[in-house]
Length: 599
Image (tube, rainbow, N blue to C red; front, side, top):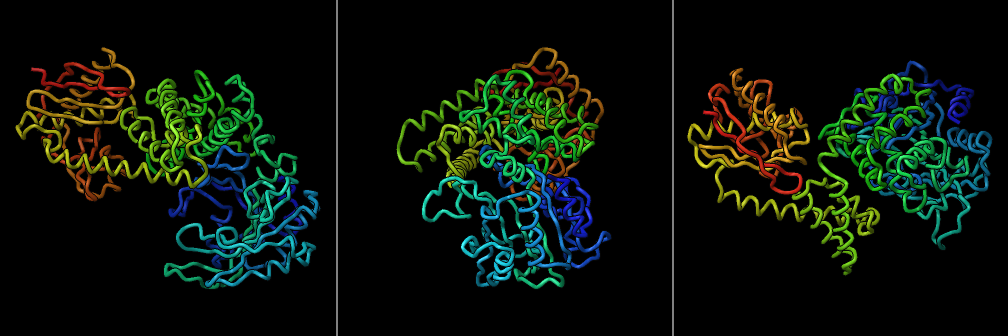
């Protein structure tokens, strides 16, 4: 089908453009390539393209706004988009003619099953009657043309400003029974499925919030490969039954020993979608992190891992599924096979890190908590509020990330659709703000920064806390996060996240690393910057609710950088030799160490 699309437009004098990386190379306003036209923005604004004014191509896409919807039969994060473009050449009538011809002659779709939507206009932009007339001219009767508002039939800009305009969308009637008298292309019942979208870029949205006519009128179309493959293959309700996903579903079913059926649809689909997306992100140079593109990748990986746990997959899970995703696409994207070893290694690392943070038994217990809340009854809103409060408390005590709390609330039926997610988020934030308010009040009554005094010994141990924190992360893993501390002249008490009791060998390695940095006499430097700058620069900052907009970042050589209020010694040699006196468990997933001077 892909070759057929490209060939069709090449016969119409279009030239094929490059399929570029998911990571934008010149546009910092977005995290990922979310549309085929992103690499064409300069040419849509009037610059001459080296291949001419009529273009076509296939582009890999990643969109994060549908993450919560993945699990139904047709939403995805990563997908491939076919498109054709006119850079000031042909316009609505020609573009619509091309679309109609491809759908009916090349894809062999029944003309009577094709329905259309166009922009209805508003107080800023006129109704798109021109597109409606063009559709009627190729044989679509006006009773199969619907006018809809901006939510449905307006595109762009990709960032805060840029090219935009009305669009016309093509739908296929799946043959399902109508859900009622108001059922139409805007309905979500599944009777009508969108197959193609033609955007007519007439405007540039500027920084003043105004729509100005572009010097050239452009056409930008987008046809999702996954959706078209499902429709033409007879799988109108489920993209995951097509050859693009089915090998992944079969792999998940094999590992779990379960069938692809209603009780498992959502879990298996999320795994298939997220593993595929993560493979492409890694191949395009993204690495797991806690911010930006890396955060999206880590979120996809962890959501997939959660679903493997739900399905009861033991041992390697997503790392065992990744090779299937690579094999599906390596002919079209040879770099996937080349990078396979590195990709799978990252999958293994993330599985290991997450496994230390959240165990299957803890997740099962947490899910049971949500089920009890659902069974308790009451209004929908009150149930969601109780669930959000439970999620916050669970995050604080067990470390189960918020995304997973929301997933489990969905799985037991407490949260449904986007409205339920919105309310859950709201109640969670209210609980968080209440907690922060109490924390701030409590902090005023406690020692500043966890220090009992400002003696030289206390200041030395305060600096040693930074060395201990970084040493723990290097020896045990970056899942380690400080969760509290108390420092007195005679000892440092340090709390952190970690699933298991530390072995004698681990404690010894941590002590050796700290004392090595002491002996190196590293200089301690202070820089003041915004919290955003600090986090982007890699500084550790795990108490965001306590920080001001501007923070102090302490650098200990090139070993440690951390947001902190001080005070500290000027170089590590001043600390002296230290040792870990004992360790304790302070609850699920949390440990406590006592560090003292080794006199």
